[in-house]
Structure formats: structure tokens, C-alpha cells
Length: 140
Image 1 (cartoon, rainbow, N blue to C red):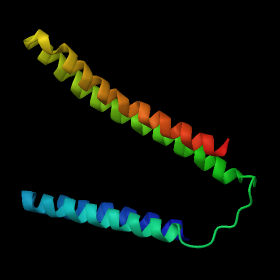
Image 2 (image 1 turned 120 degrees about the horizontal axis):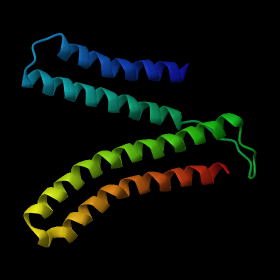
Image 3 (image 1 turned 120 degrees about the vertical axis):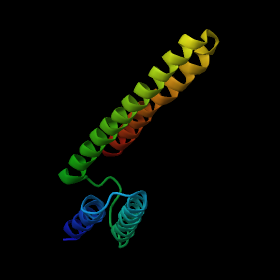
Image 4 (image 1 turned 90 degrees about the vertical axis):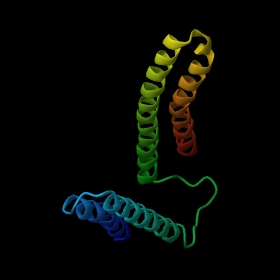
């Protein structure tokens, strides 16, 4: 019940401001108002859901077996973390590598600086991989 209500509230917090912008006059003021409303409502719902999710008592013994649902959720979350981090790294590397190539063609002395920026963008994927290993290490 809680998951359904939270999911529907999150969906409404995304779709309502978007419909407000799409079906009205497209001005900068309206866009800013839409983005602020969307961000505020989305993050306030997420904070409220997190607080409600972590309230209550937890009863677990040392060495207790994890349920199948917990293990499945851990695998899904590890896959999502890795996938989303790699997509973000791909976008970042595409932008930084093309800019680095353009800058190096203009001035050959900045190859080292350009490679650093490309490597920093690639680090995003490694961070996602480390987080997924941490998640999987908790359930295995």
C-alpha cells in the first residue's frame, strides 16, 4: 500500500508540472516555475518516503538468512547502479573527449590536461561499479 501511494505521488509530481508547461504558453518564467515545482515536489516526496520507510523497529538475529525478495532487490539495484553510472560516464566521456580532441588540435601542449578531464569522466563508471560490488557484498 505504501509503495503504491509513494509511486503514484512521484508520478503525479513529475506529470503535473510537465502538463502545466506543455499545455500553456511556453515562456521562461513558466519553465522556471515548472522546474522548481517539479524539483520541490519530487524531492519532498522522496524525503518523506525515506523517513517513513526507516521508522519502526527492526528485529534481526546475527546470521539470519535473507529472504529471496531482499536478494532479488539487491541484484536489481546493483544492476541499475552499474547501468546508470555507465550511461552517465558515456555521456560525460563523449562530451569531454570531443572537447579534448578539439583543444589538442589547437594547442598540443595541453594533452595532459585534456586526458585528466577524460579520465575524471570515466571515473563515474568505476564509482558505480564499486557501489554495485558493495551492494552485492552485503547479500552474498
